[in-house]
Length: 91
Image (tube, rainbow, N blue to C red; front, side, top):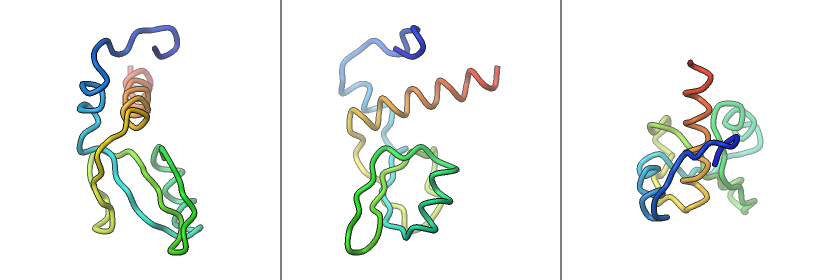
């Protein structure tokens, strides 16, 4: 559901498959985080000794340091909602 509209009807694995290749993990410092959070949907953030470990959503890899990761159900839901919102804004 997104704003009262059914966006997806299917199995959890099918939803996660939709986000395959669109979820990335990257470790950044605070300044890089500020830039990324203004440009991408961040699905999770963990503070580590190496910096902030982010999972973010993007159609393509924007930086060689980004590592493709298997989408969780939460990643997939956020991908669905964000991509639906983008289509609504374009209409």
